[in-house]
Amino acid sequence: MQVSKHLHLKFTQKPKMMKKTVLMLFIGLLSLGVYAQETAKIEFKSETIDYGEIERGSDGVRVFEFTNTGDAPLVISSVKSSCGCTIPKKPEEPIMPGKVGKIEVKYDTNRVGPIRKAITVTSNAETPTKVLKIKGTVKNPGAK
Image (cartoon, rainbow, N blue to C red; front, side):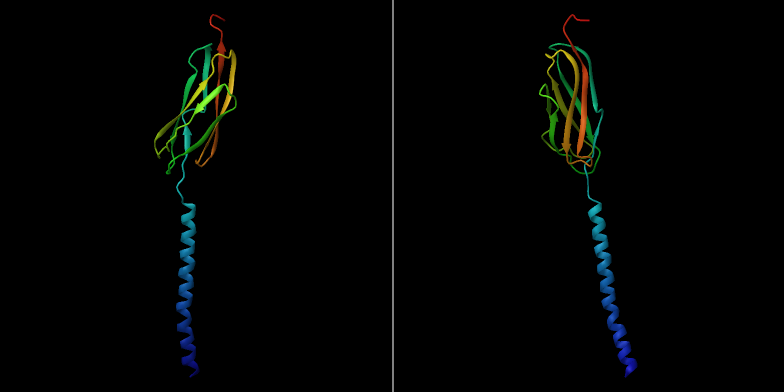
């Protein structure tokens, strides 16, 4: 009787251990799925725009081009300038993976002197904050 009772316990415990093992494997695979989430990535063609020397009152509009190199849609939530003399304009629609987007920047060229401004871009990208720069000099017409 003792042997049959021992065999019965041994065989009834195996399915319980199998269930625990399968459950642990399932939880492990599920946790790996959490780390494999899709992310957007923003890659700028250039992070600095150099206006060079431009005349007062000339066109102050320039464009930062970027590509979403990630595998999820890229959403630009805000674009802010370090000064009221620079007006950035962000894309309103999400930028799909592999697609190109543009951030337009308009500098007030009626201000004579050096240009050294920062534009902060906030998005859902892997690196959520990027700082872009514009530089140059605004000269009076005819000045050397």
